[in-house]
Image (cartoon, rainbow, N blue to C red; front, side, top):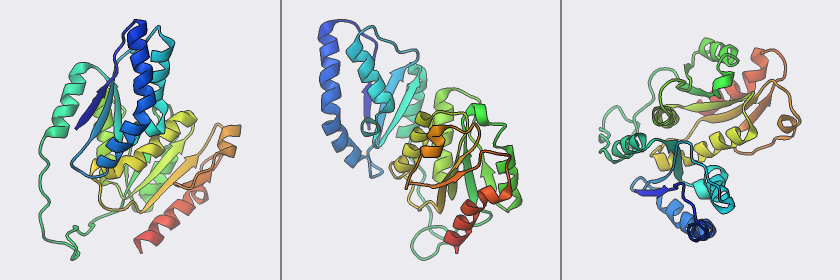
Length: 250
């Protein structure tokens, strides 16, 4: 397991070392990302809570770690207390139970039983706004999982990872959250193989809702089905995702 720590320090010499580390990260990050594609190697970038710096280069480096997709490739990014970091590492190093054979489909994977699980991701400020989507998905026979909104950052992050591991499909609700938040969630979908997920996602979508913004109108992606609805929720606005999910399920 590779853990990168970012601390608050002062002084030109250390500031220069931060700049050197930032410049070298694309190369070292690429090697670590390649190793993290399997289940035997994990990457973690940790930043203390309230991390600030008076040095411009350090501030740039911290923002680089928080927002750059290459720096985060194959890695989990946490900004927590040191005790929460210890708990997270202990959980990661704890041996996972081995999968048992039986009730399989002939290739070692357990056959899906029960309803399909849809993970409906949203920012805390949009928790109430997703209620119509949650209700409609449930009425269509899906088991709907929502993000954990209580607990410390380590608990919320761990629950988010486990939901990504267990779900059959994902809908990211893009409402009041920033585009940076949306990009973070899309990167999480790219990281799930590194978390240990082996089965493919049946469908993944973005539901862009109110408030309407030029950025939402312009946003495009090939990584997920994009649906826009800047009015009241209607079942038709979510139908493309449901059809995709049922079609993929066969």
